[in-house]
Image (cartoon, rainbow, N blue to C red; front, side):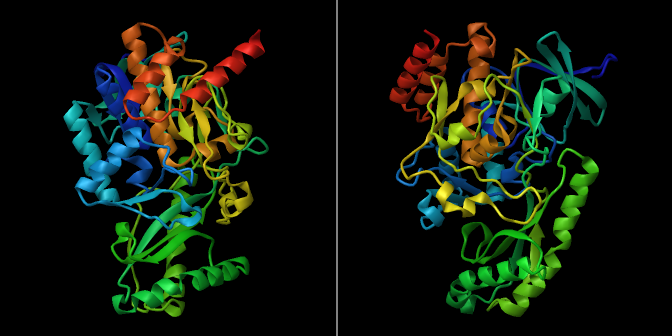
Length: 450
């Protein structure tokens, strides 16, 4: 907490802290609902993991139909206008998958905040909070002119690390229950200068090379790695990509720096391997590395419900559903081996099935005017692993931003809004919510209380 008097940077209706996939959808939704909105973002550009960490893939299907629309669909359409996105129909397990350009993604977000008049502050980390009882009065941000206060009626914590909730004194959850370790992290790197004349040979070699890399990794002869591919993938314009794995504590600045440097240090070994073993890669060069480490999990704010493994595995429905999820419990090894439970296809949901995402995981339990969305939503280690893909973060962000605006308009706290009205607003804005499942869940809940 910061006790001294500080100048006010701005005062508005809704402040969204964190301009990543969840935060951007929250800000856009709140502005469209008719309130004044500001975004506070610590990085130089908007987009978070989708731009700075270059995680450029969205999944939207339960393997039989697309189930995520709303702002996700609009973002795809806007990217299409820049010729900056493509479908990947043959993605493993046949998820409807979109791959996009992170550079154009930043422009799409820039377009939208300008169109909606959303005040935007990049280069502006949140470093503390001011509270009074159960109300968050303001956040403290670091600016070029020193520490300043940002005040609002409603706040949305979309920082990924639950910074706002933590600084405000909310209870938080970190990592897995047994030891607090979080999922492994990856640094995306891009390679260029493939021999285009050998395109078919390069693409055909992907499977055998992946198998060989796994064998070498298991023998300690190659560093741990995540997804990689070579070929005509849109984002990389006929080039190669690889994610170098690492592990540690993303809430420790020194350790976060170490992990980033450690992942980067592995790249020369991968480059050597590709040049010596991969056809058409004899003259391969390192083109770039992502500006930020891909962090999958850290701190989470405790909400009115803690989304858990059973919610995913049992495909649960909720009376306060704000959208649907379909991803499996996809845990990347906290020790950084590169293994993910995604490889165990027996854990994948049956095609055509979804679970519902409840509004109550977006409502902070300890602060009356704080909502959360994205990576820091209320969930266990396993529940978070199900909610982790960016399209699910879009759903949570759109719901949180809409709820923040509606609560102001209704003159009530977010926990007390008319949830049915929120659901109808989301449906009108393109979100798919299976209303029959909502009614059934509401009836079951009423029966249990009777």
